[in-house]
Image (tube, rainbow, N blue to C red; front, side):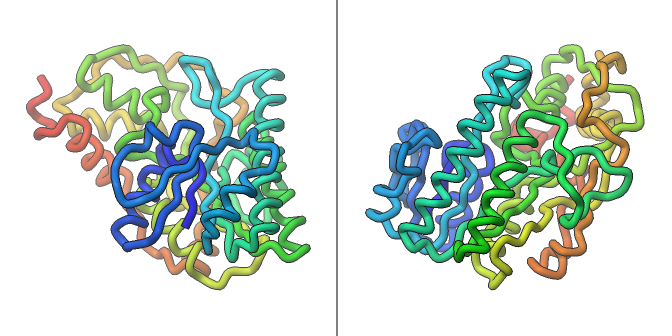
Length: 310
């Protein structure tokens, strides 16, 4: 097994799960020294490799490649690339770099590629997001990932055995501290200001353990090349309700909350997955409820009972 983006949030959890299954793992990352630990072999690799990683793939000959590497923004307040320069970088690195990797997988006779896509590829729609909807990405990250999915589908027609998981708002221990849920959990300890959009905008929050399960099943099952499958819960949760859940777990904190953050183009009232295909194709019929996932995350983040946070 090979994992790109091995030092990222989902990549680390995926490697941990593969280790527990006794798989031979090759971790591909820009900074493999940051991965740490035992039970796998680390390789220095990036999306900007001219050969797409062909040399590494021919050396290690993995049966399955999980492709999670992506270009991230440098803004201290945002994990995603922003603006025209951010879009240009995302298309150059996420899209073109990903396309080169897929070509390398084909040349190296990799048996299966699982691309970790994003729900942001869909863009806003008036109903739950289905895999057969036309992409209408409104974010730089979404546009670059949608372009990579298009390339994956074209290569699948030419013989590449690849599928894409459209991951919704993944959360869990070790997530990027700039993202919303880590910010709220941190504020439960520091009581820093939390700025929310007005009520009415929801996200489908899916625990990273469920994302990893979806990845493992996508890698193991006989799926149709070029297939796209959502990885979400099917439930939309308002950010106000996320804060309320954390408050209920943390003795009422954070208390410094304002609803004055301006909505972004991607904010929508129906940003949730249609999970029918996930259930039927991956057999993933049960997912972790948001409050249960948040309770686990609070315990992991503070390493002691949440009520003691005064």
